[in-house]
Length: 268
Image 1 (cartoon, rainbow, N blue to C red):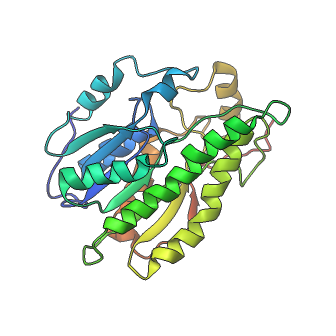
Image 2 (tube, helix red, strand yellow; image 1 turned 180 degrees about the horizontal axis):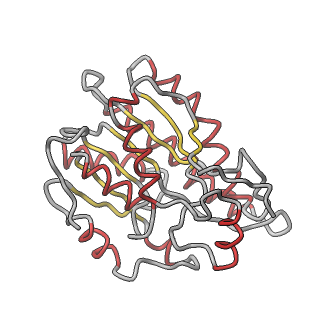
Image 3 (cartoon, rainbow, N blue to C red; image 1 turned 120 degrees about the vertical axis):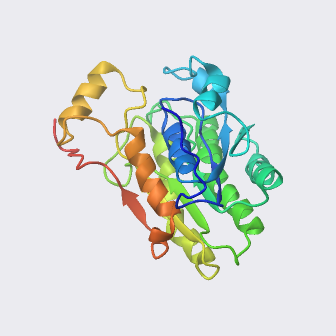
């Protein structure tokens, strides 16, 4: 089914940057598809070497296949490959979007570096990488977004992503959990910094989402702890983001929204 890029959608005339778009099974892909269908123009960022190093691997069709499934680069879609370990990369992504579409109204910092290291094996190098990609890049993206934003334009939105580390421990993923915890904690301060300009800042914790990364045993275990008996779907996360990006959410800022389907972490 194709993507309806109707100019009559609730985000018509607005431009969004979505980071972490490199797999058709991923949340970033679903976010982009949802924003395009709402009428936005979207610039997507990817860093495919990260996926290649992970158990789930890169998308079998490559970025060419991902972009084709989104309708292809053109009047409504642009793509940039950027490594957020480089402190200059966040600003460069926003600059590319401004060069391509003239401005940016919505920033969705969905990207993440996954790091499975427990206390006994955690390294300074991995802590630094997780911080740089997950937390530092989110701040620098927000900074660059705010610097170019015309406050006379409606709908300034920043949407960040955290995980469930504020609801239960994640002792086997310390670099990831710590850096995602920083995003949770920065939400209120960033929102206050931009509130007088009419720009909202909110963070989404999507809970367990089936993007193909979990093995069968973990998938079954987590599934038992979800009332519906299944993991969340990327399109369900995308609908939350679409709402936060819309005028309907103009009165919401500084919030961390847990979209977890009633996840019962205490179930064994």
